[in-house]
Length: 88
Figure 1 (spheres, rainbow, N blue to C red):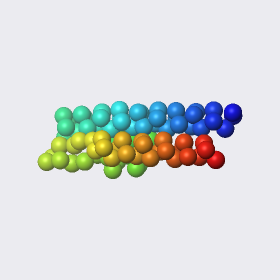
Figure 2 (cartoon, helix red, strand yellow):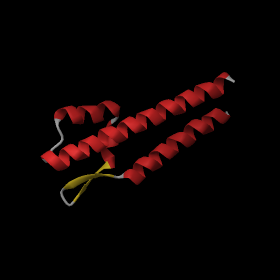
Figure 3 (cartoon, helix red, strand yellow):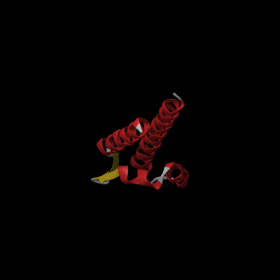
Figure 4 (cartoon, rainbow, N blue to C red):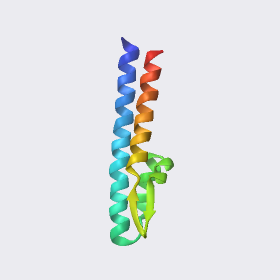
């Protein structure tokens, strides 16, 4: 079924995007916690993915950390959305 194949490809692309965002955000956290700031290049990398990913960076007592649960929740919601559209 071409529709199902398309939806699987779409889901795969979403998963790749989230994995890339996770790696980029982890790199940003390491950079910030080591240097005290996020470089322009790192910031541009996050913005190129989507500005919405900035909300998953949380300041905790002067250290940056990743709100992993919120990122996982977003990934699950995107997966459900793609699978729901595959049913139609």
